[in-house]
Image 1: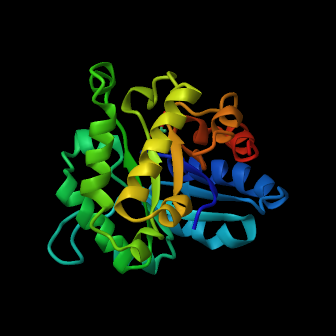
Image 2: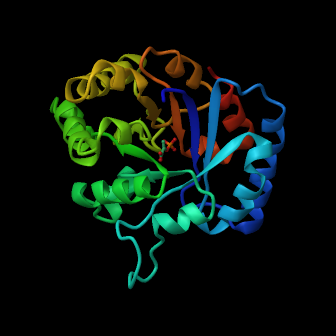
Length: 252
Ligand code: PEP
């Protein structure tokens, strides 16, 4: 179902005490915001999940994980399964973030398996895609993003796809302070929606929530979220500053 979403990806930041303080500074004001039209998702380090899920409902947010295993259970030391996430009341999970693709060599096959694991456990994948700078400069960005989408989620039925959120994150914009221009963001979001329409149908495409990520902040969120095919944002750096994140949440 298409909706406005602002998701904060805390990445590998904050000790337990720091996370507790940031959570309080975000969650308390969230209680008093009129968020009828916006869903807020916090993706902290999964170790702290319970602190978040304990207060999520009364504070108007959902909890997401940043990663999960592509295996269902067993001898995979250090891994966390989708079933474990589900048992901790986690509702969303990032898949295919560029940092996981780059630093942990996660390929399309593995990402599609993660998507399947999550859906089997009724967790919504937030499927990230995006091109590196060289791909954009050589005009290959549509091919690259199209391939990522095709290999990561196009094996799903339309019914399954309804539980997926897509996040377009140009890698050159992540953590760099270089945001995609409104034209660049709208063009790619429309391209992704069109791919979905071609593979499934227009109704499925119109129902897809597509987030923008990459140096989205309190100053540029309003302009980006106003674009026709942008349904919100996946926020990294700015999600670690309560005041900024709360401004972004109110940018629709
Ligand atoms: C991200 O890592 O998903 C992200 C969008 O980071 P930032 O907002 O810091 O660019």
